[in-house]
Image (tube, rainbow, N blue to C red; front, side, top):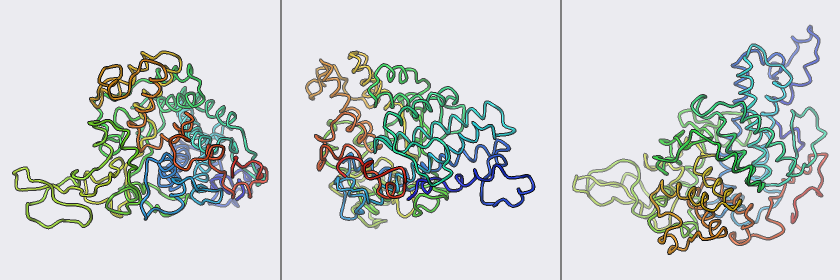
Length: 513
C-alpha cells in the first residue's frame, strides 16, 4: 500500500487543480474538493474539521479495532471461543506484520492525520474566506489537537512512524521518523491548540477544548518523563471535577459530557451507520463495543480474573464497571410468576414484596458493564451502541498529576491527589493504617508509585489506558503473559506499509519482526 493510499483520497487529489486557468475551472471533477474554491464560509470550514474528527469514530479506531487493541494488549480481557483470531492475537501476543486488524488501525490513524493536514494546510495557506479570525484559529486548533491525538496513538503503539505534516500529492512515500520527532510535532500542535481552543462549555459538546489540549499535552510530557512540564500542564487544568460524578457515568449514555469529561469520541445510535465498512468514508455513529463485550450477544470477551483481583474488597468501582452473578439489568421489573423475557444466563431476582421482580445475571464469570447498555435495555442486540468513548477525563488528570509530583519527590501532594480519586468512591485514604494493612503503605517514593499503579489500574479499567501505562513503566514483561523482551515493546509496522512506501524498507521494521 503506497503512502498516498493511506490518505483520505477525497482531500489528497485536490492540490493539482489549484493552478488552473480561469477558463478551465468548468472542467473540474465535481467529486474533488478544491481548497481555494471550497473554503468560502464558516460551514465549509467546519465540515472539513468535522471530517478530521470522523476517523476517531471508524471501525479502525473507537468503532471496533481501537478498543480491542488496547484492552486486549493490556490483558484486561479474556477471550471466549467466539473471539476473532486477529483480535485474539493482540491478547496472546502472537501478532505479526501481516495482521489485518493492525493495518486497519494504522490506516484509520493516518486517514485522520491526512484529514487534519488538509485543514491545517488550507488555513495556513490563507485559503479560508469570509470567516472571522477567531473562528479560523479555533478550527485550526481543533485540527492540530486531532493530529496530535492521532500521532499520540501511532507513536505509542509503534514508536517511530512516517511523519506527514501536509497533504500527500504523489506516491514518493514518506520516511520513518524517530519517536522524538513525532513527539516534537505533537507538543507543537498542542501548544497552538491550548492557546486557541475555547474552554469547556464555550463550544459544542464533543469538540476539542483548551482543557483537552492541556490534558493531552500533560500526558505527552508524562510519557516523555518530563515531570516538571507534566506537572505544570496538569495542575493548570481548570473547570472540571470528579466530585458528585458517579463512576458508572463515565461509561454510559446518561453520563456523557459530565463535569469530569474532558474529551469524548461521539456516537449517536439514532443516526447509526454501517459499521461493517472498513475505515473509509461514511457515517460511523455507532460502535461494536456493546455487542462484542456483552454477555448476552456476541460474548467475545469476558473480564480477565487477574484484573478483578486487583480491586480491594468493597470498592464501588467493581459494581460500576463490571457485572457479576445476581446483578440486576434491563431497567425494568416483571410480575412474579411470568416467563423470562429473553434467553441466556439470566433469571428472575428476589422479590421485594411489590409483586414484581427484576431480571438478574446468573453467569459465574465477571463481564464488562462499562460501555454497555444493559442497565436500560434487555440486550445490546444488533442495535449498535451509541455510548461515547471517554478519551480524557479528570480522574486520569489527577492521577497523572500525582505521578509527576511523586517523580519530583513531592510525595505528600501526590498522596493528596490520589486520595481525591479515592474520596469520590468512598474508599479508605492512602496514608492511613487501614490502607497500610491492605498492602498499600505510602511511606516512600517507591511505595507511592505502587499506589499510583494500583489506582490507575482500578480507576481507568477498560478505557484503553493500561497498555500504554505498562509500556512506559517498563512493566509489560512482568504483567503480560506471552510478552517477549526485545520484541513486544513495539507493535510490528504493517507489512503493507513497508511494501508500498518507497521510502521505507524492512530495515525500518521494529525489532523482532
